[in-house]
Length: 475
Image (cartoon, rainbow, N blue to C red; front, side):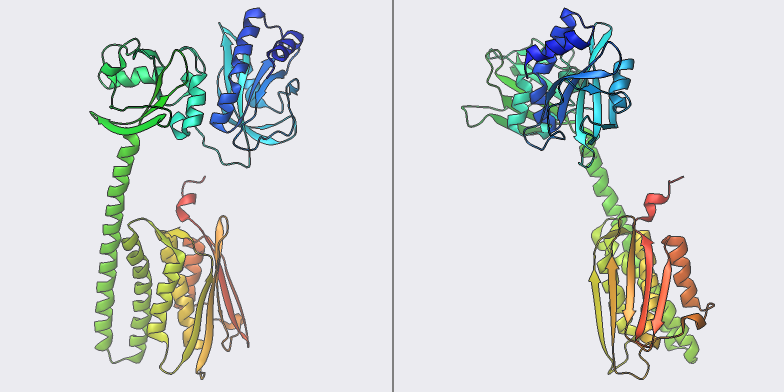
């Protein structure tokens, strides 16, 4: 980046004075390390005399493709295309993660920081990533998430405490001189040491006296050291980075991961609680199933035994989901495991001796929550019962296929058999099984049901929402 070009544009299109232009030039000098650190395009825009803004400096990331084919330095940024830049230049405040249209008509997401000189906003520091890329919506940089080279490159370009980059970092940062003293600390590090109980500011102190973990970095091969330690109630992730600078020997990056560790503990406890809950539900359902079997054996009525058998199957369908959830310890279960369990239970109770059934499950396999899995299990159970009970009368073989198709919001399941078929128009609308299926699909799965049948067989398909919990708070 030519500093002469930066000054030329500022003098031609802006009303910045000499000191303000010098500040913009210093900022432009530091863009490349930031672009590499963030894997993003970085720009400096300055307000023009007659409105809009002009790009005076840019840096493209070296590790990932840029969102730009050509240089945009010297091009105007229209306020209607880049509202984030406009907002920051007008109000002098940060703007995070807003959509924008570049000079090359590419859709990007912008985060903008004001460049202030005294009480005046003289420019905007802009980070852009293409809208089709996955990006982390964070207000700060994460030095500790980068590799050693990127960390060292970024830290080597950091100046005094008022540098915009040091206050943009999430972690605490210390710079240690070759004499072993703390020559710099950012605000995060200052507050961190204060929270740990240190009364005096660590700036100027001997690092040996305030270091939180012992480490040694020797030679050129070991330029980086990592340690995790506990100080009081705080869990810290500490990285030491050796720098190739005359006045600075070592950089220390400290990240407080206390909250993350607490969340991990809560997640483990939650997993245990969920596992125990589903285990108890499964046991209670199986107890009810055992009582129904006992009742069925002491019943003289064939019709009553049939009703009890159907009820037993529905209970076992619900129990199958809770059994899988109890094994996993989470509130998510693979749809394929649920269907396989329902298939096996249905064959056990409804496949007659001497009948050869070809039963396939194919398609996508993905996780669903307990509400979805339970409802899908009941629906598939009812549909398979009907298929095995009515589709293959007076036959000694048949074929049933379940096809699962995953969608973005809704997924679908098709149950296809090569049975004798039936007249869809004469289906008993008052039948309990069909009413259960319709109610579950409509009320619990937010989906739709479609039935097609002919002499060549029957295809019953239904749609269901992937995660019922995702829509409970939608207004």
